[in-house]
Image (cartoon, rainbow, N blue to C red; front, side, top):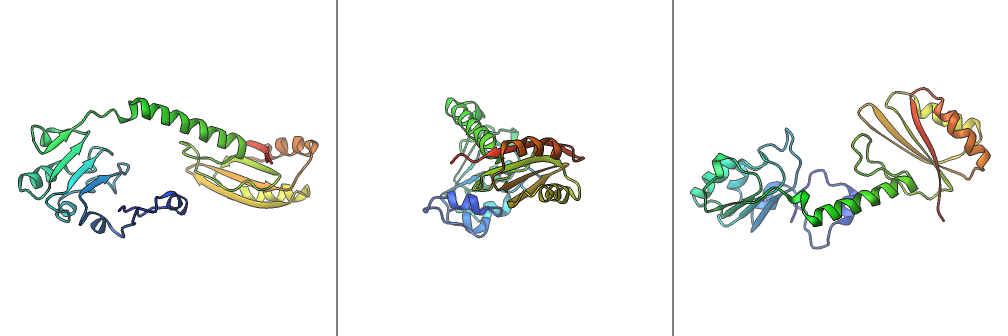
Length: 231
């Protein structure tokens, strides 16, 4: 059973049929034998599992935190273990409140440095780079938003530009003026920059050679590519 308030449709499709979605954290932990936290650390998640959440678990629950220090309130865990309201606690983050406790297992924090993790990261990076080069789709970028759409047209134009008003208007106006039909368009922004992907009908090489530099002349456009669908 799992709880994720930000579960996307795309992520939901990848879930195993054996996973039951909980409607709240309380629903997820109330009968669980094992509870694991898989969240980034921010204002919303700091202290996510503390007295109130631990009180909703069974006395035999085994709690695991391999996300970040501070997601689980270590002091609350130590008190719950001492009062037999929690079974065990496993983590790879230590502080003074959980040292020298037989019910707490502190493991080395090296998950990202294991051979398996290094191999998986390399494969993932290569796969996502190929995806970007061939389709323009962006996955897990630091500086740009995640953008993904089916590449079903003959060509796709991708643009990196500043996140300011009327960028889409200028781009679409230029394409319309050249008789280039837009079949599909997706635009997303992240902070000061945005990324736009436009699926278009087939255009010849001479037209492509004109489109790229002309679009790059639009103020605030920093990069333009035209991709050809591999059929």
